[in-house]
Length: 128
Image (cartoon, rainbow, N blue to C red; front, side, top):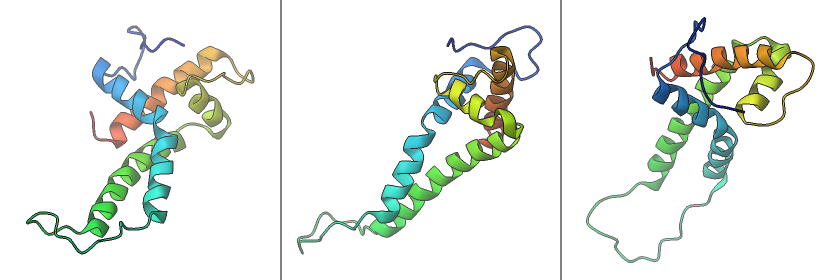
């Protein structure tokens, strides 16, 4: 599927760079969820007793900050998806991820809802 926005009669027009950032953030959603899970279940590195520089490092705080940043991105995507009617959510995610679209509605219907979905992602990520 082509990744462009119609210019005419599109109330959800985004700047091209913002559109592409939102599109790739959604396509990266599964990896973000997996990375969040890995951070939660990862064990800390085993210290060997040797000093590693002059700074004080707190790996737990770093992991918590990284997980919080990932959680904010996932929340923005999930909140935007909640703005889509339930019967179109699976198809909108499929068409956004470049997978095959379900045939229970017109492909144009899914493209229209995808435009709204990506617009909502941009709003929730404070990109507008």
